[in-house]
Length: 543
Image (cartoon, rainbow, N blue to C red; front, top):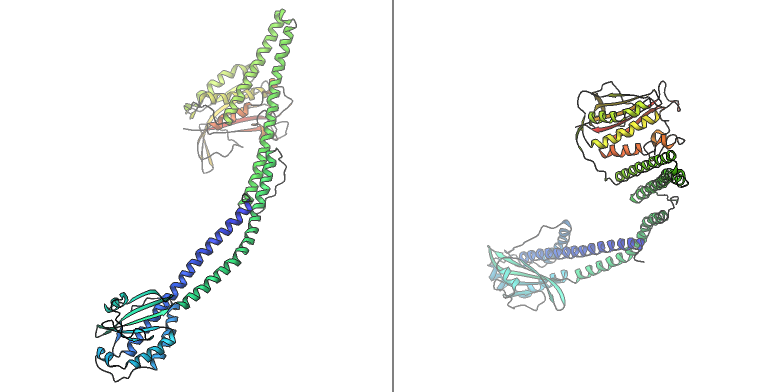
């Protein structure tokens, strides 16, 4: 069960809430404890001040008060008001004017004890008044009167003129003690030593602790329900996506998947659908590719096998027949070699493993040499070849052999699809693109391109092969670079080729970082007026 995504989400949700509540509870209890301790300390200090002023005429208490929030001050003011009422009703006679130490010795102890007892009863505070020697003169509990406390650390600190606050457990109960020095004429003449039990604070903190536990006990089940609902909204799309992936692995491309929402899971589902459609297209292309390759290989192999069987049947004894069949075998073997080489080039292009021996080369030289090599074939078919090149160099970083291979494929297509008497033109020129604006240069004749793809900003070498053949129907133009694609399926392979020439040209041009495209006007499609024909162009970065 722990492997379930829904359970993991719920547990993680509860774990976060539990940790958050634990930390918040700890901080809240710590804050409340600090609040009460600070408020009690301020209350005791205020009592010490009032006691020093009320019971010891002419004396003042040295106070070290902290700046606290308004809530602390409210508690302190309320407690100080109680103190003032209690002390005001029991103030000592106002005609006492002797020295402080003399007043303490001569004051009626019963009066001071009675006043302190009344004060302690109102605020649960134990009050002890000590002289400058650390001897207890007044004790609200009556247990330490006359006792010498000069050895206690709090009394020692107060006799030095400093306030001291500390906590101590007495008779199994926690107390907060404050010792405040009493000054007369800037001399320490006594100490007010106060203590207050912390049972009220402990009761409040215990109640708060139980309330926090109760809140946790209620919040965790509710959080579990909320987490369950959230986990379901997350796990359900994941389960649907997992089921679709499993069906896809089994070859089912039609399993329904309906992603909803604009969150990451919805985007993941839509991305999965796009991936599935592309895989389906790739699978179809693979099946078509295997079928086309098998068909392309079967035709020459059937011809070779037929020729060999004929020769074995006795034709080998006739020299003329033998030579004719051997020439056929040689021709079909050459076709197989070309097909295998083309497939090898495409497979390397797919694996991005094409070997390019790039160097700075003037592409005019490549155009001239390629045109000269194919001129005899063009002339033999009755075609007129024109080469248009600028006087300025067209230098690019390219592999001249691969560029020649591209030109040969384009010229070979023009030769196959242009009837006798037609014209083939090979042209080269420059193009500078900046901010979407194209500027031509080095054109022997101005040849604006009407459907060239948008090229990135920079300088480009444009090489084109134009013919006056029958053209390509508009419906076939988007597919001409697909492997084994023929615009006219009825063409023989002797005339139409294997259908890999343009695919190889595209792969080689893109390996150079360039672009290739076709423009065509077809008589069959009825597009345009005047002459039909096709212009194949490719662009390489200009150095």
